[in-house]
Image (cartoon, rainbow, N blue to C red; front, side, top):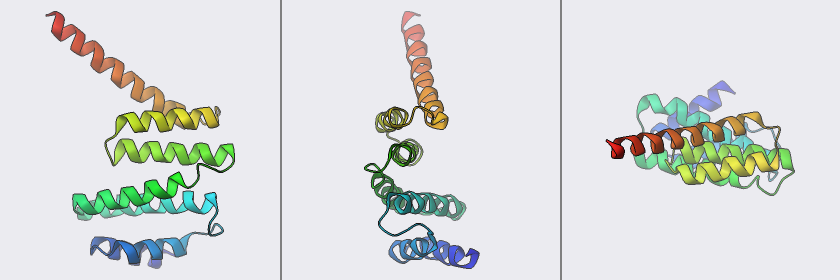
Length: 146
């Protein structure tokens, strides 16, 4: 398994995202075509991105991988509430940390919490985003007052 993951990383680093995606898909243990499989694939793509980050892939390659991971996460949205919530939280993470879209991240985190109010990690990410926005707004308000 570690060898297959290393092979997929090598393919990602060399720019062969299609082969890497196939190799990562073969590492998935969930049944093909299920929301659980899509969630697992999105997670594996993000893991691969994190490992590849040290080799400094191009911004375009990183954006393509993030988009692939996001597409996989979005395929979980029609699943049961718990899987849907995890997929929406993962989508929020991709929007926030890889694509820089805070509004989409906030919407994804809100949808995750709505789907499963017990998913504390999604609530924590949402709270952090809202706190950061409030802090920035207060800072701007204070600087305008001076």
